[in-house]
Length: 370
Ligand SMILES: [Zn+2]
Image (cartoon, rainbow, N blue to C red):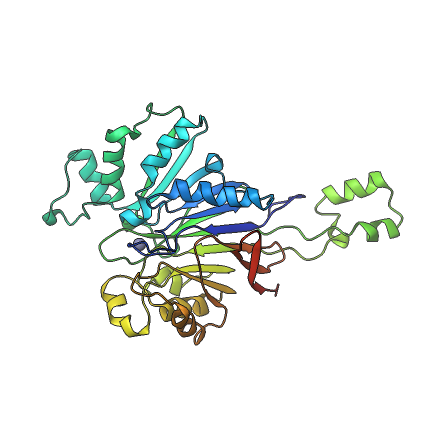
């Protein structure tokens, strides 16, 4: 259990809700996550750096304390190698360098053992169809990106390129970052022949609130209260129950038959799940390695989350209200997300979905603590 006196919630700024083809109002994938220990990106499609900057300008213009600054990003978590999820990385690295970044950046993503071996044995070569390796695998792309301006030493900051072979990750997923304030766990998902991950961001369980007035009422002075508050064993009497972990799970692109989701034992507050298709295209969803809104809702209900954000919509849909309805027929707290939406999870478990208005956030949904 992590002991903390000052603590923040998790908030996710969803900056791209289109699938591979962007539309007038929807961009390709990428979300900016603010947690208690810093800022992270999940996916980084084309143009992500401009989207982050323009979102941050809007936050500043409304006087928000919370911002989305590119300079604050500590790590980028890529769900898979399709370009609508990763094509913005290399240009972003160059911009980070130009604005004087000095701190290390981690870039995480899924690959396969075969692709890692290919890059080691045949660097610079694109895998042929007989190899069984997806030619755009992140191991291959990272190798090329390094050759095209991304190698260590090219920037004023260090880049850690970190790949995990999905064939070595079990149903329980793997912990890929475990800081005191936030754990990041990756789960293997199903996106045809492309190694792919979902990411779970979760805060640790926290001590209950300290009831100062009860300690004063028992006659403790300041000095003694300070001691009691810091002593976990003696302070039980004045503490409320432990406060549970808070978490957001982001699916990436996947069909709905993900064993890790079906067997998930961890409690999850928010699921942001792709819903490329609707009921009428259910067969297509399965054959393309994607999900329908209904599939996403079934997973949300199965895992027992409190809130489902739908994203990654096919450009064929102009009006998405029927996707929301189809999802709600299975899981009531389902919402179609827009670019720029903010989902926040409070320490007490309440969840808030807000949308950008002209000069302020507009509240769309508020799921109260349970
Ligand atoms: Zn995609």
